[in-house]
Amino acid sequence: MNTITGDDRLHTRLGATALRVSRICLGTVNFGGRVREPEARELMDYAVDTGINFIDTADMYGWREYKGYTEEVIGRWLASSAALRDQVVLATKVGNPMGDGLNDQGLSARHIIAACEASLRRLGTEWIDLYQMHHVDRDAGWDEVWQAMELLVQQGKVRYVGSSNFAGWDVVAAQEAAKARNFVGVVSEQCLYNLAVRYPELELLPAARAYGVAVLPWSPLHGGLLSGVLRKTAEGRAVKSAQGRSAAALEQMHSTIERYEQMCADFGRDPAQVGLAWVMSRPGVTSTVIGPRTPGHVKDALHALESPLSDDETARLEELFPPIGRGGTAPDAWLT
Image: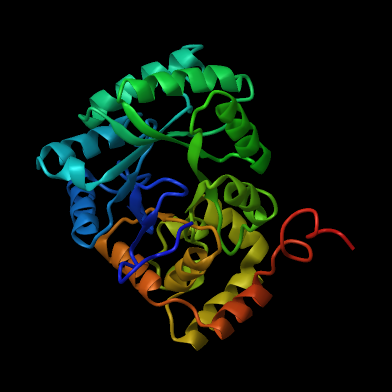
């Protein structure tokens, strides 16, 4: 499904669609607060110049400034050159709270349509290539969700629909409901997946594979945990790595991360590149969402894509970060 053809190793199909996207997706969660607008524009320019055509954002990104800020930054960047909009595959998300009102969140038909219109205004574009549901909404029935998404597709405001943070059974439910309406349904699922978090292997990845859904891992370095956090902390240059998801996981995995960083040194490779190369090599993974703060981080991701792990390196990582249970998919992973 996602095989690279010819000499183009950077691009592949988005799941079962004919849309071509880069195997590295430029995530913009750091735009606003961690990355100022001039640096954000530099990052996007660098990404496009190096062949990365896939940009991911969300309506609520930029919340450190105000919700919607990141889409506005991207919109101003797109407006700087008439050629940019046609060059990039633009993805955004809907579902997280955008205000204090009762209906300013979730996947009601009302909020989906209103949020899409607001995103289009902030992005300064007539269409969104991939409109992703940020989280599943248990209160929204699939007929309601698909009615809204179908309308946006028919109006030409959305090209494809994706999901994010869904369980495997959510993907199945969404696709079966879409099939009953003769609608394509979701074409991609964006999920937390990395060496430290392998839960998607149990049911989400098999479900995605069965339905031809692209898999877009986010936080492939687990918030910096797998980027050399111990070395960076010792050198006094840990920024994101010393906060949030990474800091919480480090308390439980300190010994494992020590061994991981030593293993990467044995490989003669940077920990961040090792962690990225592992995710990029996983069966079913289409494009890996990175959250860079500098062009150097983008360059590292490209290097990881161009320098896959050897079988021996992969085997050693599998020993250090073993799959859940006996490995493989559910229920075989936990059968004795």
